[in-house]
Length: 547
Ligand code: G3H
Image (tube, helix red, strand yellow):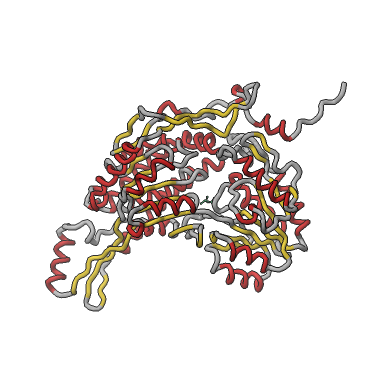
């Protein structure tokens, strides 16, 4: 009998998708308790109008061609409902006189703490939705939920700290003043598909806790992850303070922006869309934009780099969540003297990453949520190959529907899309360099300016590189991948990469503006201020100290 031949990579990828009866019990989300829900004016309502099917990148093997799984439905709202949500948020703001924006800081903190207690029990379902909607592996899905909870807890502590500092009076040049931070108004909150929970709530919750009201438009993929949390929002915040809208972004957002009713835009996505949204506002200068945008973070691998560490960090940096992180390392410059060694090790490490379904332990390469993404990745590889590059790791670039095996592509020429564009996926472009000027040329000419990673050990060289890079990017990582965390550190970018700075404490500042009460320091004014404070006549002007 001839020995059966080993399955090809394509067959292995196909077999990685489950047959319906292979799905482990309890691994699928159950939308029956939250499907078609939306939140408007403090009420969780059921949408009776048009809906869209929410598909999963996890296909099923049913005998014939792979079948895309249907995991739920999302409302496709009409303009009238969407504008009703905006009006609800505007009423809750009420020109800054609403219950929420005038509420004491301590009471707003209580509301957010209540939301946290109600959010935590939804963890398992949100984690299942993250796995099925965007293909994030179990460990990272749990991490996304837990990191978000931790971020909200830390936001409460940071606000207490900010409020304590603001409780004091300043006396300068005969003027007595109390300086606090006031909310800005109605916030439109739009997160990205790669961190649909975390990067929505790390702007939404700071915006809310500072006294703003909000309309949230979930990302195109990662839409359902908010559904199990809508009741928690409704029970924790006064009516109209948080509203969730659903529908086709290209259609429903324009009327919102053109209405001029948005005071803050919190958007994490592409700079192209960010620019478009800003231009649609009739008075762009009235709207604060807090934007997390595109990036193409480069890594420089110098001749004296510890290659074992460089490869480990490069793989984490380039392929965490299949390269779908704004902070991912998206291009590598390796010194020509170590290029072969680095590439051999990198290719081996990349090929050792287990691929499969998100719930399987150890899985690192998982299905990509955007339809057509594997073909887009292949097009990048093909174009680079036509300009002289090779796929270094055997099998790299093999695909089956939404599964795409990462490709290490070398040498990538400056005239390729892979050199210039943010690929946002599992393709690793590598260039070799002789002179660091080639790396700086890339950095200076790049449209992006978020972060960079330097791998090497010479203090003189690295010191010089830091000085040059600090005026081009906003975080320089030494012998480490690029990343946003820990969330206490500032997260921002230059050029097309960001507007404003986020971190636990910076976000509170981003969603507020300094406002002060000032008076000539004479006996009458001092008496007046004492009376207001002692008689608790103002929630802004007070000396309360939140413990
Ligand atoms: O997509 C961009 C995220 O902010 C990246 O965050 O570096 O923690 O994965 P991370």
